[in-house]
Length: 148
Image (tube, rainbow, N blue to C red):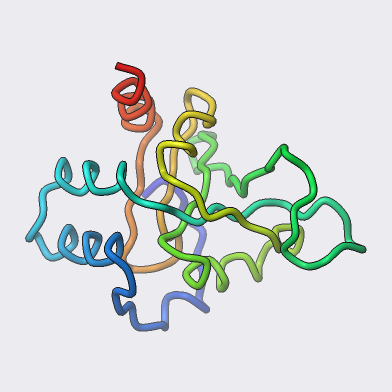
């Protein structure tokens, strides 16, 4: 696990798949899908990326800037990990713990990969039992596949 942050509000909630990506995650966790097949599905999916609100006195969740500042945490080993979620609803319990991150962006996963700096990991659905962590080497490999 990249991030060891404990999120009690999420841990007690039952995970029911509400979109294709979540169905793929459940299949991966149940052993009905390989990691390679899951990554192929992820590349074709949309994810929700929490982003920092610019100012306290603006419409909640409305991002005026073209420079999104994503929610990142530092892993135990010092690696930066960007948090993304399978839907805005999955992000809500986590974002409550980070007051500056009231906004968000629903976007294609390749868009996230292309803009993520090298050496950064990704945690999909941090805090949920059904999630997926990507070490920086995997993220870099997926990014390289998009270019080729």
